[in-house]
Every structure is written in structure tokens, then in C-alpha cells.
Image 1 (spheres, rainbow, N blue to C red):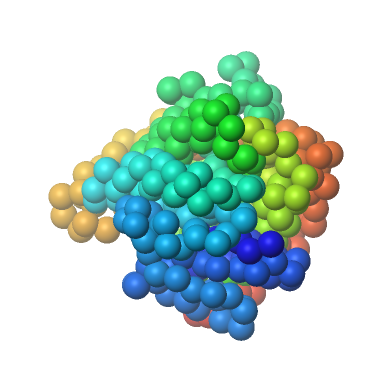
Image 2: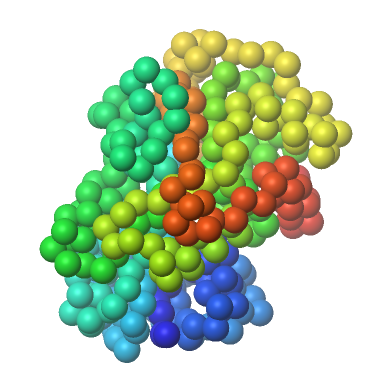
Length: 328
């Protein structure tokens, strides 16, 4: 099968591309003229230039393809221009899926986010049957991805052959940007994590996420969502694992969420008006820390045979890669 992959130069996208190439499919990747192709070195793919905000380029890119992995997104906790999230994540997705419909693409995997999965009001694990409340949708990234997913679900009801995957927090090699989770690891390695907030997340090896995409293409049910995750951990537990792997002391001081929130607001104000760069304490990251983002991943394990490689091994790969390439 010939497939188009968007977002192939990014962390998850590069892992998906390698997994799809290893499967034996003919792969075409959509890149922008300014894209850094480092993550695709040594991978046999056809590259085509285009942009999610340029519909004619998408029609050319998708022509002749039977499958589509739409992994690309504007993934960040802050942007000087918040409208960018909606232009890329919502309108860009609509542009691409419209082109896919016109081209007669037979099968689509759309990469959403675990942020579009709801959490129980009384606590517990989120699952694919739950949708977030407005209070849980903190930040333009989450809101834009939620809106995009709603558009994808609407198109699925109209016959679009799409399967939705919702990755949790990925860790592993080739986190070039790095992602917000990767930045936590980099800051830890640099000795910048002097304290922590009592929060939680679900970690998963990025290579397991990639296999989850391939199996969603092969066997996922159209219109269904699948959480691609593995282990639920508190932030304190993650730092303890990193400390065992690296010898860097884990922070012992726990800061109350309500104490950190005003500091994050101040950082956001400085970033918007003075530095015009990512805040040292991202406001949206602190807002998300209010919730333990823990999830039940059994649907993907049962229906997609999602691999569950040890998270500690994935963290080790992440640490080694960040050190090898000079991030820490």
C-alpha cells in the first residue's frame, strides 16, 4: 500500500514513519520547505513539499495514495500567536481530510491526543468513552486538538474510513524539539528540577506508539478511538526512575499547585510582552498538573495488540539520546 504520512519529521511522526517503512509499505512524507529532516536520515521515503494550510499542495501530496497517517500538529504549551494552534490543528486537518476524500483514500489513521480523552469527575482512569469537560481543556493546544477530533468523528459518521489514536506522553529517542515531556527530562538532566508538583501522567515508549499506529491502520475499527499508552506514574515516581538511571538527585520539595499557578501566570505575562519565548514555567503545563492524567489503555492492548515495553527502558533511551546529542 502507498501511504502519505504528515508530521514525519517530528517525534511521534518519525517513529511512525520508520514503523511503516519496516512493515513494507511505500511511504511518501509531507514536509515543509523549512522542515528539519534529521529524524528521517537513513529512512527510504519519498518527500513532497506542502503545508496543511495550503490545500492545493495537499491534493498533490495525497494523489495516488491508498492510506494516510495524519500525525502532524502544532504541539506546544505556548505560542505568541494562539491562533496558530487552530489554523494548523483544526483547519489544517479539515483541509487534509478533504483532500483525502477527493483522492479516494481507503484508510486513514488520525493522531489525536490523550488530552481529548475525558477524566472521571470523581477521579480514576480516563477511557475512550469519556470526553473532557471545558474545565479540563486547559490551553489552546488541547482545545484545538479536541475540536479537530470532533471534526474527524463527524466525518467518520459520514463515511470517512478513519481510525483515531490518542497517544499519552511519549518518551524515547529522537525527541528533537523536544516535546513538553522531553523538556521535563532535559531540565532534570540539567539539574533544573529543584521541586515538583504532585501530579501524574501516563508514559509510553514512542516506538510502541508507532506500532499502535500501524495496527490501527491494519485492524482498528472505523470511527473508534484508541488510547496508545502504558504506565500511569506520578511526577515524583518519574523523577525517582530518572534518578536511578542517571545518578542525578530527584527533587524532594513538593510545591502546592496553587502556589505555582501565580508564578506561571507571571511567566506567561513576561513571555507574551517581554521575552517572546517559551515561559520557564508554562502556564498550560501547570494548569494540566491539577489533574492526574492517568488512563485505562486496555482497549488498544486488546484490539490493536499494543506493545507495552517497559517505560523505564524508554526513559533510558530518552536520557541516552538527549546526552548523545548535547541537550544535557
